[in-house]
Image (tube, rainbow, N blue to C red; front, side, top):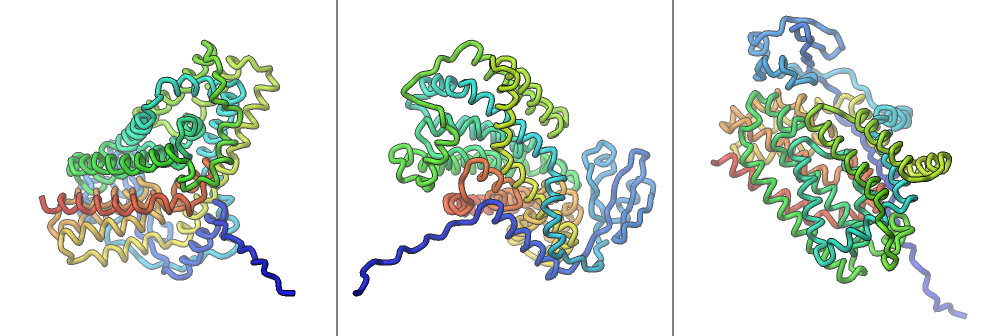
Length: 507
């Protein structure tokens, strides 16, 4: 008897965040077999007014820190930039590149890299876990629910304004002081609010993550990118700033229009969401106890609790932007906030502590992903291939016209940004080498600084070695769906960046 039953096709399930990162980790290790190892000598400034030169074999030589020494070594950075600590990281010495003994990374290195990555990322991991603990406390006490009920009344009919305000504030933080990793703390807070307003989780990711990406991509006073890059290029960070401001405004408008069009569509018909099948699970996770039909009283105690939490962010931003604070201090701020919230919660000591611990446990996967992503960079660093890529890049751009030079520079920095995701590290390494090439093609060095910003910036939208995988894991969205959603916007952003670069070259 013939069976008419059709076999049900198994649909392809995109790998988890951990699997994606391990695939990239293995690919990075393969590259260390394919790309020759090489290094530039490094120059480090010391407090005793000397330079330390570290060669490819790790040998160190001390010399007096003088303008004459810098000039003799074709380093166009003023001595003052070292003395006032504008340049803190070791810089590459132009013309010092040498091939060195290959150090390909094998299976053992791949296994250990993820563990070493977690060790190296312990500061941000602790920060993430403390945030998770606080969110657990706020959910347990009903503070979030009461706050959402109050906010939904205020924003009724004006939900998109919330997107604009959040995006603008984050972009402002990105362009001025490099607000990026710190935004991880915002997802547990804003996700319930946005979802309760009728949006899906993709709108939340786009608003927060792209706000940070656009801000840092078009940095104006960000000390971790444009300031250190300009100093390393031997120019003022205000040179060419007007073009970056124009790019920031235009790209912000483009991004908000793109988000707004999608958000309106999803709000009108949730089935049109690109993550419609994931939203029940995400809602269950972030709005487990929220019932919009039952208004929870927003008591004085709950208001004070939220004020304490919000003040923690204010103090964090103030510390990062003006006092050179970093994750250790930020974690301390939120730990104090957690203790205060425990007292305000009215929960018994054991219940308060267990609630905090359970909240932290919810973000363990995010914390581990941050460590594994760092492991990719460890593989590339230990394989000594980043400098080789930089050296070969300098050969590519020789003799080009100004406009083509700027475009190729942006493409090069897009690639280098994958291998060296630290904006300050990439600036210190590459600018002493790349910036002088602008002189040879008769364009301003500020063009190289902008190409560095734009290239590394747009790649952050999708590069697995950056913050995007941890962000998606935090929310519960797979990488393939994010890529599908953002790719059109990314292409438009690249074109807009190339136009701004072209104007900067020609004007």
